[in-house]
Image (cartoon, rainbow, N blue to C red; front, side, top):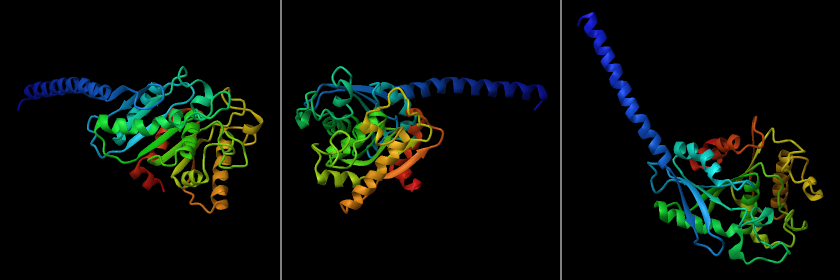
Length: 302
């Protein structure tokens, strides 16, 4: 083959590769964007919810289902977007329900569970914000054809508050693994402290507490989430007794759980982990959280 002919062939090959990539990349982008879906959910006694999801294109029925709980920004769409690539990488169904400020105003109605109203009166169990998760799981399984009989659940900031209180209040929930990341303050596993800082006067039973202590719950903390003056950090006397900042409070909560398990002779399957270089940012916590939420990743991290 002559030098000129070879050069022409190389140009043709390069052009063919360019055309192939130009054709392939839009298809990849379409597949990636089409994996993002949302749907309305009204299959419970509370207000209708918007649910944001990622369904990877090659998802098969037996793959894991992962719930992600947003913070006080009520920005479920942003949380879905921040977890989207992880859902594609690890091939799991991502479910992010949105508890709007309009329907679940303030801390009490969302991350404390709507267990009591603003006057301190008990709210029927079917109207707790906690009570939406199990029926959403059933609806998602039916909608996306999933066969998993349990799910993992993650929350960041106010979402982490939701997650650990959910485990206390709904001990029968089909939770396989849970991660609470960078909660601002906690409900301690102690019936001598009044709710919501402890379990005194709450709707949680001793049996429910023991069930929660036995679940694989990871308290995930950013090692730079240590600002005692952070604008959204609760600074009531009860919260300050848990520590000056989120990282200290996370250590305090884990230690309280360990002591409760010893006191009650209960199984204790909580774990404590830190993310180096992470402050109060869900995006920095998510990749590490995925390791604790998925079966093969969790096994590898132990």
